[in-house]
Image (tube, rainbow over all chains, first blue to last red):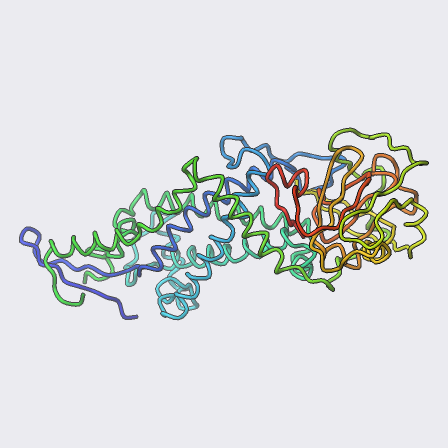
Length: 230
Length: 239
């Protein structure tokens, strides 16, 4: 894939390379999505507090009592206002992101395909069993691609399950595919948990060795990427 | 950008790229107390507008087998004010007014004289729980035709014996499954479920299903939307 690369002449450090990893639209969507997910998960927890169960109302078994401090909106009506407002921002961001990735071809940088299978085990060995460090040839290694591809699918599913809960009558076919209204609600919840786990892992990785990645998600440019040094 | 650049120029370019993210700060307005309420109100209004686009007049809500019904003793009851506003069932009548050719009071016999429909549909509360119940009554559309309601009017408003109030858009009121319900599980509506008459619209969320109806008005403007809507809930909330 063609990437935009420049050489930088610096008196002190000599010549270094920089790669334009993240186009503007991708960065914009990333941070808009960060805000949306924060609001949607927070208000979602408040909505869940109104009926913290997936079973029947009578008799009701409360599953989890989320601390109020994690919730956004104050009460059910307030949380619904947040949720029903930001779901459209979330959806618009997702559509813009997917549309851009598809039409620009930029998705090749991050989409996990059959060519990445071979790279999975060496990375698992590296991350979880202190194995040798595999040589990195592209912006993302196989596990990163797998994680980022999965979370995009989870994002799409979060929207679909959300719509099935919001419109179980008008979109009765969609709710049916999910196993009905109860299951749609459970799927929506489990997908939120999966996305929250991704965010947790994502933050840990950024904190451990992601300063350059963090900067490149802000400015687009990454200096001296490992995968370009021979 | 493919030309070699010196470090200073690279830093300047990076800074420009960073500044291009500034439009996102606009979302920060949601965190400013002064803007928060009007913005969320706009967001909810947009969501309601989209909700309206999803509504299909001829799309029927799923119906269920008798074996899917929630047992009547496990049918949860959400009350607004009192469990039973003590409606005098013998002297009850519904006062109809507004954009109708035949305003006046209609007793239960007049409503029961209309064709009866019974359907097993899902009742979903805004809180997230649901029950499947058997509801019987006259079609709201038939009743509106009987009183000569203007079908081009925009809203139906009802008031209730427990001082609850609600409104419904005309498209939903005319939906074939929207009922003026006087029976549940083939028995007369009990007091805790809204005797003698309640709304039952399977295309709407629970708080729209007003109980203990006392008045019905057909109108083009709403002075107030509904008890919960006026606290900040969605105005349209079709499901």
